[in-house]
Length: 101
Image (cartoon, rainbow, N blue to C red; front, side, top):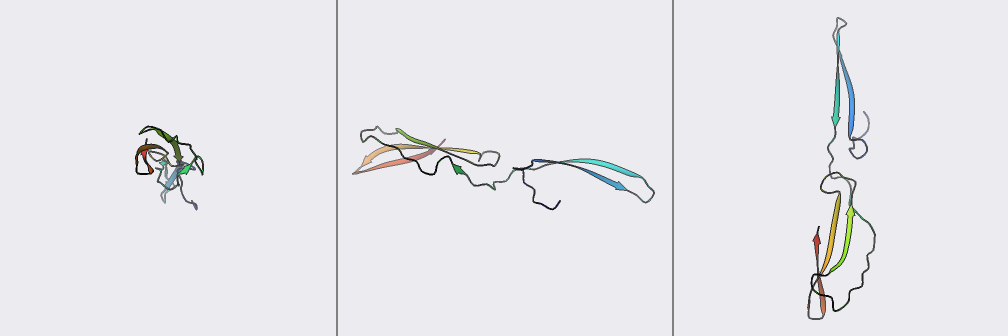
């Protein structure tokens, strides 16, 4: 095999191996190679820009925006949801916090 193994492209390979001796006898073994995924893909947001209008009288912990990022890797890193919540106003600026779902 002359190419890099990539579980995102092909997660399972089936191979056959043959062993022979000098006397003409042989045996055959079937091998199933299952690749585990590594975190080799960058996450991608659904959109490149998010805009949201926030009323100035919104209450604390109001859900302002939910964004989703996905990647091609299997497992826990496949989908990430981030909620942006409002916090109390301190002085003249509004504060926010993100929360991974």
